[in-house]
Image (cartoon, rainbow, N blue to C red; front, side, top):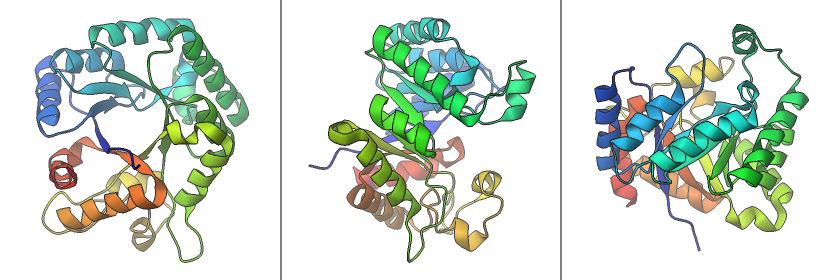
Length: 273
């Protein structure tokens, strides 16, 4: 039986409590399930912002998407996580990644480990939470073999990037999901598969604004970007059909969008429900 859909949206509003809480209430009313925040230096800190959002809502879950595990000691992070878990009434989801921006490590006055070391530390953090905070769902997002192996074995939710074009002879998203399936073994059916959408239309043109996607995939042409699963185009009904296809083809049931897409994608949510 196919899993139910879930929908998340990223929070990028300013630091004012009112603006954060107003946006949280609005996305809850629009039918979103989860409000996310990223974890980068020189932007708003995720835990205070998500606490403000949780205290202003009743149903909406809140989560990090994703914390750079390399910035945290597990026991200290667990203190923040359990505090927000309790203040939100159990509505917190912990999203983790290995970290990839060298400049942010340097700005934080931390050494920049090798990719293998960063994934190993992510595994260490994850193990701490399995032992000490087992009731908080863990999302691990990434694309590489080592990270997805860890995610398949220890996460509850797998964050997939969908960041390469689908072609006639190769489907990168299907390849990554097959890899996760093999690494997860018997627990694969328990996993929730997430896809982060980075571009979609915000008007009636059907054409997506691909400015965010270009930041992550600068070498790809517009035609290639349009063939990545993270880019949606067309009418509300056409996009809803694409999302249904993601569930049927890939088993992806958890879709996240950016704040700028919230109003437009809410129409897609209504179509799907």
